[in-house]
Length: 203
Ligand SMILES: [Zn+2]
Image (tube, rainbow, N blue to C red; front, side, top):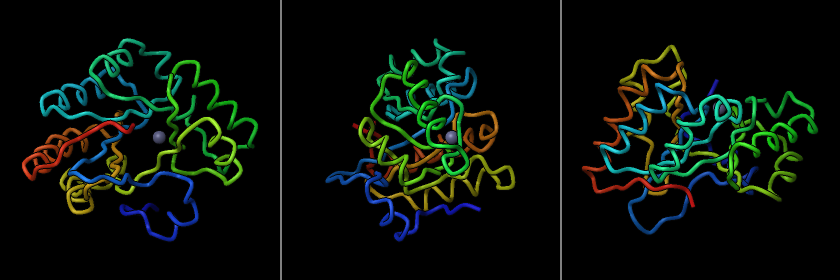
């Protein structure tokens, strides 16, 4: 089960996490989790370039290790990177020492003070520990591109109907998400740019 729009109660409990960004202009913050991937991340980078959009990529350390050239291009293209742990561990199901060590391992490959917990699942203790080194970035709009049961059109609709100025949108540069992402990303970019929005990295 997942919610496309983050309920206000949850954001209140985890008020030390970033769920959206206060902006005075029409900025939107695109984020891509689980890469880098040679095909999917390259598609995302080409698409962003075409629309002159910037984004933040929450990478897995193990994928950066495997595809250093794709990782290098993310940075060369002027995007930002964040830590998404080494092996995509679930904070609710992993003991704290293992979880925190896994984030620190990823830090050897990903130079960033941004962190996003895999599955959005993280305990209060883990938050308190990681807060010392990272700004923890959640989201307010989930594209659900990872959901094999939804159509690409529905994925686009989630994004278009829930995004506002300051929103943090989650997509995935992963194989699983690719068929929905491929359709929804260019259409979402086109839709919001036409309405005067711009896409920026998370500072
Ligand atoms: Zn993830």
